[in-house]
Image 1 (cartoon, rainbow, N blue to C red):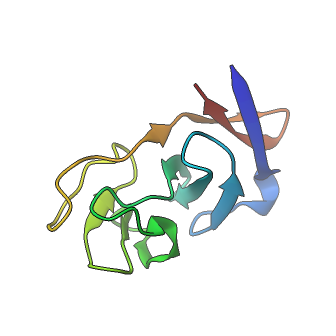
Image 2 (cartoon, helix red, strand yellow; image 1 turned 90 degrees about the horizontal axis):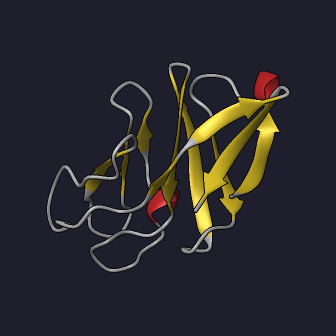
Length: 105
């Protein structure tokens, strides 16, 4: 299993987001929602737009695609609004030796 280092855990507080390169989609958005860490592919399932460039809500743990406004749940990748109806990939995130890491398949 491959892993991508995101940031030192003490430099990635709640409300933070980082875009990292890696995975099948090319880019992955990593989010800290109230201390819970999530990673989601940077690709809207509606039209392959740059999902992680959209606004995100750290209280609801969702990101909104900047192209057509589909919201996605960061924990599951499930779309919460149209026009997207297919989920996007999510990846496990963990802290190892003080570093936030994304696990890739």
